[in-house]
Length: 345
Image (cartoon, rainbow, N blue to C red; front, top):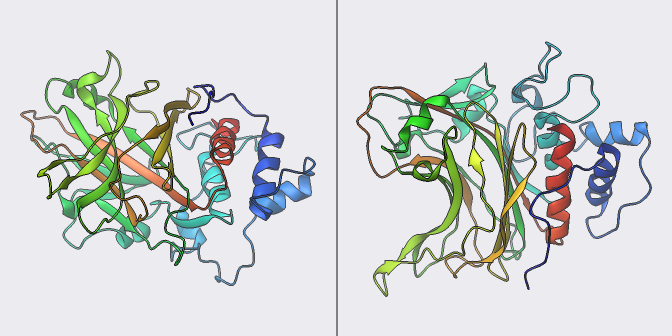
């Protein structure tokens, strides 16, 4: 049943949001308790002694390799206030990592971490210290990243729990030159939530950037499809419902994405926000067909147009802060986590 829920997520007071997060981190099935005091909030934000010797869970990377916070006192591209009054995108990433439901994450805030998901043949993806993120460079006349230059982060779901709800979060940024592509490259298969289904050649859910649908002053409109091919009927199986709301990507602006997948009911909810706009729910418990109802295995930063372009300009995209949470009890908890990001926008 589709819930009658607002399309725009309201800004949550930081203490309320942190309380919801900390309460769920202790026991995701319990309701949030009283507002935490400063010591409890600090403890929730601090790394725990989890026996990883300073290594981030499921990254294999030292916490120090995830980068450093801006020191110039500005809001900056990291999206957080410099006075410590609200979490930055780095804090938000860490808070998601600290949750009990955390299964997999990549910050891509160092060359070493990018290398964990990079092929030896990669030539067009690197670490950019200015944006503190992975950067993809599209040279003249190039419209797609080859598989060698995509970042494909693979993981294995917990044994015996293949069909639990999953929340995917990540961030992206596009430079202003992409605004001129609406008459060239029509679409990027920008990201892949990958799945494997034995009787179909399925990849998974595919968030896309639709350059041809962007209004003036924007880069692309965000939508999604199911990506795959059914050898039985010899045709695509990309059915998914219409957008419930639209979100157009602004140039030179960090954009945040959340996808909540209810595998048991084959329904997907997606939000998008950026540095200046609150989260917009563009899909609301939207049904999709049974491409891979009980299997998920990875996430790709893909950027594939399946076409080239005739344009001498250089184009750039950045990506970072991938987190996968598995086993959230409800869509409402996912919505609370989306709303929490607003205290650091």
